[in-house]
Image (cartoon, rainbow, N blue to C red; front, side):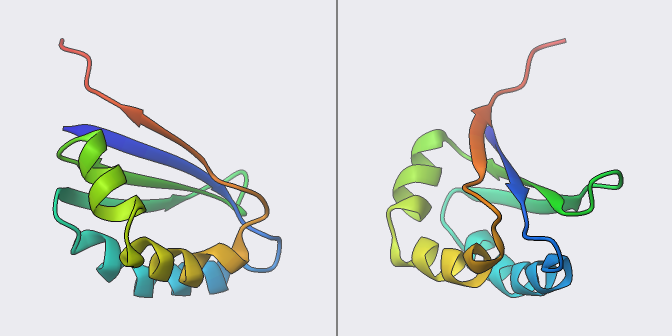
Length: 97
């Protein structure tokens, strides 16, 4: 399992519209093969900053089953107009305890 972490800065004044667009876009990403869970969080100190957390079976599941498909285009069309800039996206794996 890998965790995709996307730091998303939203245009000031677009926060509620972004959250509404995400509510609609959530169904697109969660239906993707290899997607285990999706969660969006919002900053308290920085309310225009959101963090998207997506658990994938693998980086390949993210890139091939979602990023390279029409589903990603629909997802981005919903939420992208609210971006203040390109999201910073990275993948992480758990560190054993």
